[in-house]
Image (tube, rainbow, N blue to C red):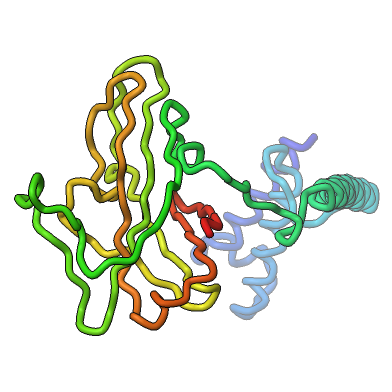
Length: 253
């Protein structure tokens, strides 16, 4: 039936569009009226063409489409709600986890009392021994005058801190203090802070880079320049070592 109607419509369109033929069989029309008829005929033709998807839907088709849209919207809303619930749960879990972590104020830096432990050199001992005040160092230059002598500037004195470095590993051990990047500062009488001098002395702790045999012990020093007035009345000495982003405070007097 559809094929028959389609054929009839095609013939109607041809009869309308042929200017020379069929002129006596149709009423006279203006160009605008003729265009309307052609448009209507084309729509009818497309409507009955099984391969054509029309823009106009029946009430049943429109209802089905609306139902599909509503169902899709419902599913999307459900998925969104589940995602929001999961994100909220994760946030609560994260907050609870963070609350278990110590705050910045609660975090404590490790406290060191041993220099070799601080420098991660458990095989050796580095112990403070004593201090002395002098006008130059070393005092005895007869046997080691080739290394030079350190003098303070006018009106100052030298504070010499003595340390014993001992190899307790039971075998030869290579000590490399320069390789650690060790830094230090000395506080005098709890007020003035001085940084040890950089020297070329062979017994300067900063320059200690040698192999010690098992049980061998050597003396090393740190040289600090202080005022003569401070040198006359030293009541306390504190030293701070810094290494690998950490520090160690030690009272030596």
